[in-house]
Image (tube, rainbow, N blue to C red; front, side):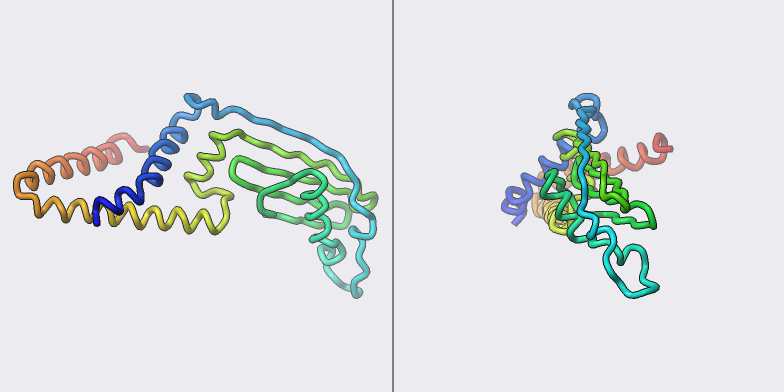
Length: 191
């Protein structure tokens, strides 16, 4: 079981090990690559002023779905919609994805907008995947599954060690020293 779970979890171990380094040392891996693109356009005016019953909220007066799909179709906006703010004069729309953000500021009177898309490069994408930031529920489930597999691998390795009489004591000593080093670093050097 330990061998096959280890092979199954190999990609996860490698991914989280490498991205642990890219998170701790972004300057080693060209992490400061940033691309900012700005675009202008116009949303059709009727989408900004829907006919709704008297007393409705301002956000109900904007066809949010059409606005979002227009931005995606016209400018290739990606990521998840995280905010759609509407007031009397403007709309602010924000999308986020791994290593990516897009913000649109829309004038409700004219429909004119300014869209800013920021891409942070492949290292930022990997780092966001490592942290599970702006990656969606499917990736979150993959992280949870990886954590479960790695936990089982660790525990099955420890259990396996108890069945190997010649390696039991040296293995337990090494495991204890490793745990002590982690605890000491946390106690002594983590602010």
